[in-house]
Image 1: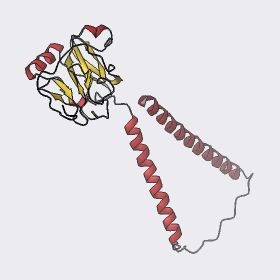
Image 2: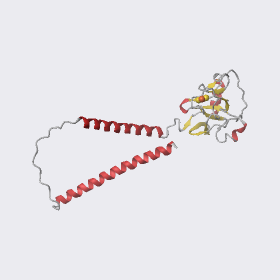
Image 3: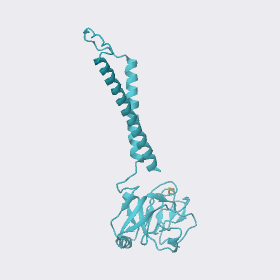
Image 4: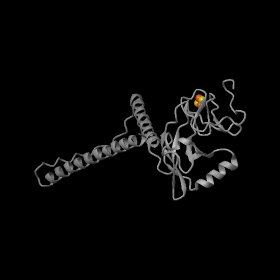
Length: 242
Ligand code: FES
């Protein structure tokens, strides 16, 4: 969607530029034709004007001053707004969030780190967690998402968008904003969130892990529980009287 919007904006700017270029070209051709005719004597050359006295700069009225200032401000604002809009919608093609992110790590190295830290592998620049997933439904509801036993969860809470940290005590994801809770596979367990955490596709190519953050896949609906994981300790977030 953002890519399409960016392409439309760029196409419009290129079209505008071409229009201005063609207009300038036509005007220069017309001026050259008039000059050639004048040189050939078809058009009487205008009498040279008698030299005038050097003009004194006319004082600018207050109204003109304000009008020009206003126009300059509007032009500047439009240019800045346009540049900022293009920067915002332009697809990220450099391996940051919104692109395919190559972690350049084999799956086993990531799983070892998860085991030794006792928490998911977090990649802040990509805004995702990698969790181990061996659930039975990897080939059904998570089809195409799991790569070599790893699944990528978007860090953003599906309730109102807060970043959801992982609670090492409970081994669940717990949102500090309004208390939504998700199990280790990002499946909804509690709170106001409408579904499980959204996720990205994990790809393993040539033995290395990549995550496609360009396409966000909606989390599974409430009631999905493919790993039957109970909280493994006290919760970190106690909003809602837990
Ligand atoms: S934003 Fe996470 S529970 Fe509201």
